[in-house]
Image (cartoon, rainbow, N blue to C red; front, side):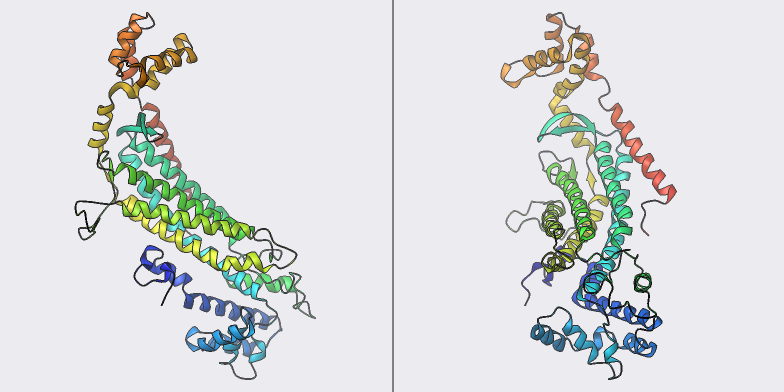
Length: 460
């Protein structure tokens, strides 16, 4: 029986993907830990720390299907040590002459921090790949709807015209910054750990062995960078990775939130892709709920909470401190699952997003020339000063004044006061409201094209 929804066979699809499970599942984690021990023995054999024959036998035996996991669990509980059960489980499947050469000179944190480096590398690559797909979809929307007008909204209220292309371009631009962060951060996150008891590599400082060179070789064989210095209590790498993933989820929740709001039937400007078998409500059959948009917000909330735990881990004592580091064991895989799932869902949402330009135009027409007040304000500011123009238009257009709200009546009132002719006001109100929006969309599209041409920020 499971107690966490992320482990539920019924609900797991909401919190993970099969690809993420292959990276983060129980068996996958144990195999990764065993793989790290295999590489450790191999590089130690080349350095003369353990026999080469033992390293070969360990490599053959270190498979999850060969380990007695009931023994591992029992020994872990019995010893109250994080990995001694694993050590004894692996030693149990090795010949007597090889058992002394397992897990030599390494600590729990050498094993788990190196796994963190592998995890941050692989999850980062997965996210980078899927974020590129979301960015591509947003760029396509920006290009197609460069000049599709819609009401821009502030504080949930109609404000002034924009284009849907501008909105989609802002999504793509923000996603690009996350892609840059992931690409730039990879060299900081994808590192190994072999610090020994207090980070001084004392165990391997024996005759004929260069501990720093051994660590460098250990990391390289795992496809990780050498950290240069032990990072047992320097947890900024993990915290930064968690923050970037939570920030990615925040952006995806922003996109999902737009869809949730604009899919409301009284607005009807966007809609999630759906399937005929999808059920919105078991009591209101007419409903088509924005399930993905809502779930992106849910995932983002949980990702932020896990990222907060990782940030707490940066405050650590001396050369080893298990309080924050052990909390990372729960929080790092969690934020990886949540963010990977969010990006996977966002690909589906943005790629299949339904856009309804006719509803966008109808909503603009519904609010009429009131949405031209910013342009009229700008023109009047040149003539009578910004603050004087602001006070005047507030007097004429404020809902409590009883004054007509459309620009035609506004033109008449301004003409009566001798401030502007009716023709001038109408020209200000009808001047292209989104000319600069198109230029900004073009700038985002051009930057994205340049990045792809240069091959920067793309999946490795």
